[in-house]
Structure formats: structure tokens, C-alpha cells
Image (cartoon, rainbow, N blue to C red; front, side, top):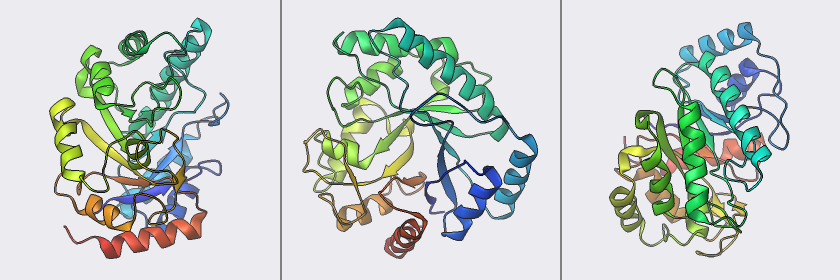
Length: 278
């Protein structure tokens, strides 16, 4: 089944978010666990979550992807910043357990001058403090574009983090098309080659989610500027290949393009027309 959705707001509740997903033709969705630029999380409304889960079951909406706030930096040179990331992620995972088998995506962070190796070690240290075999959410490392001192800009850096994680069955990867493109991976002209490299370095079985975003910048720009599907440097032909690729077609896709609901509805409809593999 083609699992396609987008980033939606949970500010009006989970049930409302599920209704919005259905209204735009989505059968999955992504949402922020809390204020993306802050730290506050809304109180949990268990009745709303129960209603949401029932609604999603009735309408075959699955594969929920929760996104951590942008303020987290697990590999900052500031110990207080790292501690904030630890406490926030612990709380997020605890809250997400109410959703059952969901996924939790986060940006690995920026080493802020400490060096990539130190950054990788600090990220794995944090993950080993919070991941347990019993937890329900699977934690996903997002591939990054390589701005500044970002960690996770190469498959090798992602693999280095995973290698240090003790409970490996609870860790995976979210591949962002804009990020890997801006990071220098030519998914436009050599998708198969990029996926072969991913499989060799990380393992294709670790790939659990895909952010579908076109890019405002050429390959290797290291800038991370999302564009609407087909309107950027990646292009509609590449996205047709991505959603129909034999290794990717069963993985859930999430749009993070600069759109409102109507724009997402149009992109989802377009991608459904371009989908040929079932």
C-alpha cells in the first residue's frame, strides 16, 4: 500500500489532525511532539487519543511519525543543552507510548566545534540512556544537509551513531530527500547508486521513513531549503522514481514542503497518479 501523508498540526488535538489527514487524501501523517521552537508540550488528553486511534483504524491511517522539536541538540558543547535534549526526548517517548507502534524522528544535532567524532559519541550516549527494549516508539535519525557543524550529513556518520546504540532494534533512519540532495547525494540522476551506498553503509532495513521534499538548491549546496514537489532542483521525474522504487515503495512518505492543506492535497493527489508500483 502506498503510504503517503504530510506534516500536520496537532494543536487542535489528535482527532482533528486525523480528520485533516483524511480530508486531503493522506493515510499517514507527521506531527511535532511539542512547540518546535520551544519546550512546552500540551497536557495529554487520553480520550482524544483514543478517539484518534479508533478513527485511524476505521480509515486505515497508519505509521504515525512524531517529530522532535528543533531546539534539541544532543551533541552541543553546552552540557545544559544536552541535558535538555535528554529530558525532552525521555518525556516525548513516554508520552508517545499512548499511540502504540509509532516512530519518533529527531535531528542528530550540531557538534558546535567539538568535532564530528565527539558529536557522534554524545548522541549515542544520550540514546543509550533513553532507549529501552520495552519502549513502543522506534527512534529515527534524520539524514541532514550538512549546514555548519551538523552531524548526520553522511551515511557514515549516521552509521557511526547506530553502531554505538545498544538496543539496535529500536533505532532506524528517516531519509530526507532535500537533505541528502543538499548533502551531495545525487538522488536525481543516480537513485539506485545512492540506495546501494545506503545499504552498504547503514543497511536498507534501517530505513523506516522518507521525508519527501524538493530542494531550492543544487546538489551539494549544504543549505536545507525545502521546495514544493517538482518545483525545485530534484524534480518530478526523480520523485516518480523514488515513490516507485522497489526498495522504497513500502516505506511511508511524509511531505514537508512549503504548503498549506490545499497544497498538500494537490501534491498527494499528484503523487498518487505517479505511483505505479503496488
